[in-house]
Image 1 (cartoon, rainbow, N blue to C red):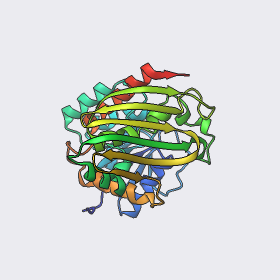
Image 2 (image 1 turned 90 degrees about the horizontal axis):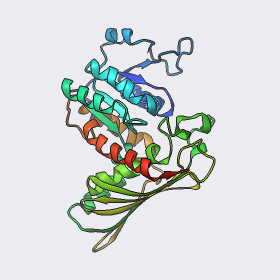
Image 3 (image 1 turned 135 degrees about the vertical axis):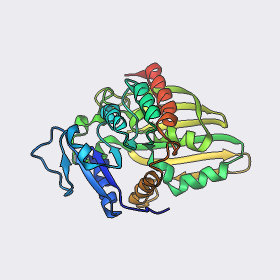
Image 4 (image 1 turned 30 degrees about the vertical axis):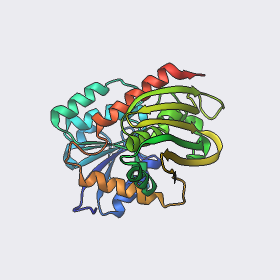
Length: 301
């Protein structure tokens, strides 16, 4: 799959993930402009143009919007982009709450705005292989595990000042590391039910959970999900037992992660006019609602 022509994109949020996207887009030959409301006087270090108000957006005639700002600002930003019929690349998770989600979905559907909610691990070759191997087979047991240490995610920042440490801003193990639940859905089919527990076991967050243990029901079987963001052990793997064999995928295998992010960007660019692209907002919102419902009934500090 290759990029067919140069595209002009607007990036909302120049944190670590936004900076990575910009770097890759520039390397791919695309034009990127940064929206930096309230950031006057602090120019970005990427050498890309900046706009500081929505009134300036029209003059740039951008072809897509990449929303990579803090989680609790996602929907507000996406609403403004949808109003201008700009295709939306939205970093996971969708938001910190359900506030205005239905309004956004209605607007996207009304204006036929293409959307994509970014879960980059779908593009990992181990995930692709595993998904193909279990296709049509009975799954007896499945386990999706992720262990990491939140203070190491962005070592240049105080992790307690990051949205990742705050429940109200969309942080915590459940939403910020929701890749595992997305992978369950992607490999085993839509999630029907989530049960389990969320806990705050350490001081790596302010008020958000740092540990998740869940049993997930899908139409093709059950899966166990373990997420721990207070662990000094780094691990990310999937183990699926079928009737005939045990399949494993190691997602921390030393691969260049830029390759995954670039493939994801290429997918979005190539499908940015298609409202039915993989994991569009309407599709992704089904999982998001289940995650929030699970958090509401399961989290105990």
